[in-house]
Length: 120
Image 1 (spheres, rainbow, N blue to C red):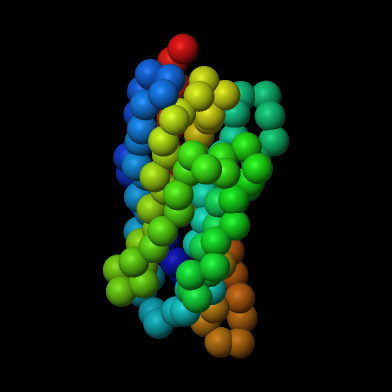
Image 2: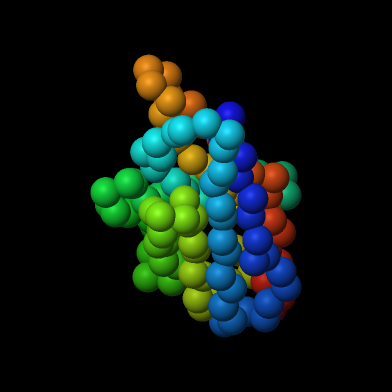
């Protein structure tokens, strides 16, 4: 199994910045295909924020394009989410996700979530 540990959430004023981190670890050898961030606001469904593949290909939700940047450190199995120009509507619990393979199976793992609150 692969475990994810997130950090970096908090309270920030609108227009401010936060940087989230997520480290993946496991007891056996595994290969990470993709890492990403999702978020869930109160009363809403969980939604995709951004993903990055092992090859460095990124995807962003329209709502965060130009404001958020996803990056990774493959050697450390770590993914980052730099969030700039934050808006109150970005307030949510942010979850790290990874799709990983231990041949021949592919799995999904989730972090415990970190709260991001943007005040107006």
